[in-house]
Structures are given as structure tokens and as C-alpha cells.
Image 1 (tube, rainbow, N blue to C red):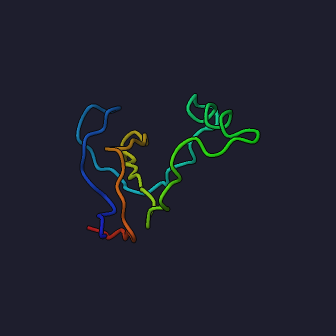
Image 2: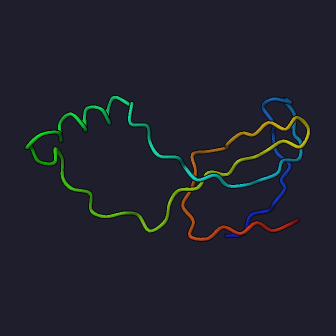
Image 3: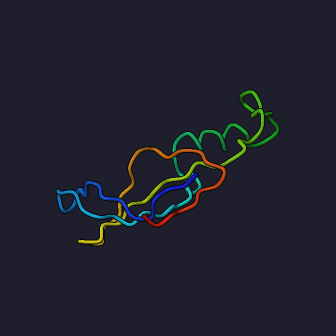
Length: 93
């Protein structure tokens, strides 16, 4: 998938449309301190089995987040919730 290296879009800090530099950041690992994960660890501890049906397998590609860094103020922000892509290539406009 080809994505432009720079894009003119809205900056929530400047409150106006400015030129942004685009780069990816992989999603980080989910926190072990969240309630659902703590409950899962508690249920699977000891001699009991897996508490829900086993996962059917991993997805072929990870989700990517596009980060937009404003060239005016230098602040970064993410738009949307990410998408799956096998290969991401940045092209200059």
C-alpha cells in the first residue's frame, strides 16, 4: 500500500489545517494491568483449563497506526483506529 509521506490535514493543537509528516507506529502490547487481563490470569491459574474457546489462529498481518506529526507545532496524533496492511510504502508527493 502506498501512502504519501506528507499530508495536509487538521491539527488539533493548532486548530487549523497544516502540513503533517506521516509515519507508522506498531500497536503496543495490551497492558497486563487491565481488568480483563487480570481476570484471565486469575481464571487460568492453577489446574483449570482455558476459560473460553481456543483462538483459531493469528491474523496474517498486524494492525498499523498512522501517526501524523505537525510541522508547525511538532505535536503528533493518530487518526482512526488503524488498519491491516501487508506492506506499507511511503512515497514523496
